[in-house]
Image 1: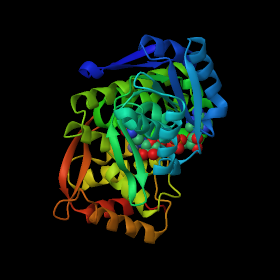
Image 2: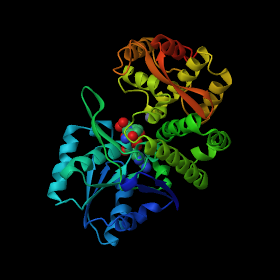
Image 3: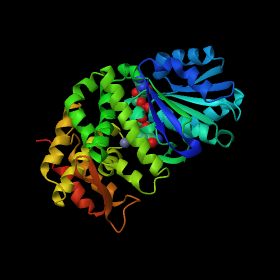
Length: 364
Ligand SMILES: NC(=O)c1ccc[n+]([C@@H]2O[C@H](COP(=O)([O-])OP(=O)(O)OC[C@H]3O[C@@H](n4cnc5c(N)ncnc54)[C@H](O)[C@@H]3O)[C@@H](O)[C@H]2O)c1
Ligand SMILES: [Zn+2]
């Protein structure tokens, strides 16, 4: 088992990564001194595959466990599902010593994490992520949220997990497209802060796609370490944490312009990274080699490197960026790579420049 320690004073926690580690859930809760009762929150895809192993381990360690299942998909990050979880926790007699175990992708992690953050003013949450995105991104860092009709993640809380348990073997049942989408975030970490890791990915990306055990554990561990380092230094997102948004300014705009349909988040981020590369080139910050290395690696990971959407949607991207709440004086903030392994936050990029960069990604 590989362990990554997240240093946050009293709220420090560990991330354990290893094939078969689902069955150590009971041991993890015991070592936390968790109270008798716990609720495993999962979704309709993940529950039938993995909830049995997790609840079996918890029961074996003496815990009273109930499973609450939400429908799979982003729509479950809703006020309705949140209220359903709160009411289920009451019905299960969860108290301040109880634990919510979030078993699933980022949707379950964000929803169950927010339910735990708010139930009785906050109870313990243990994250057991089962998508690549959740393993390397959403389960670490303490952000939890639900969506409103008006937008994604509009209501949420910072609530650090008490522990994170990652079993990379669960990724074998993940649809390949979802796996690739998660790898966009993995590649992102290399670009923003770790050139040697990026080089290892250049060597091993096929092994990672095939979920070769040692390569997968190492890559997930490295991403968790990097995210932990950034989020410990900037828990509430005032500065440094912004570099994690590499590829996300244009990525989010692409997602919004396509109505969150067609492109997965990681696919939009991959295109956003390449657009950022072209912007950095246009501003004279880098040469084209920095972008082309990212392009080659993203393509090998099975991610799109040219714009698959119709022209009018690409026009919509510019509108979204212009009306971004975070834009200042009509300019947007972008994270741009100076070289592989180092980025700068640039606050006065014209949205037109980003849109033009995106246009260069249009397939022939
Ligand atoms: N809190 C954060 O810091 C943070 C960061 C990034 C993203 N997010 C959030 O994460 C969410 C996206 O997460 P996601 O990409 O994991 O999506 P997801 O949770 O919807 O999972 C994707 C799909 O894979 C299925 N699935 C999950 N694990 C599986 C497995 N092992 N085998 C088979 N199927 C499996 C799910 O049921 C779902 O259908 C978004 O809501 C986003 O806002 C949060
Ligand atoms: Zn992301």
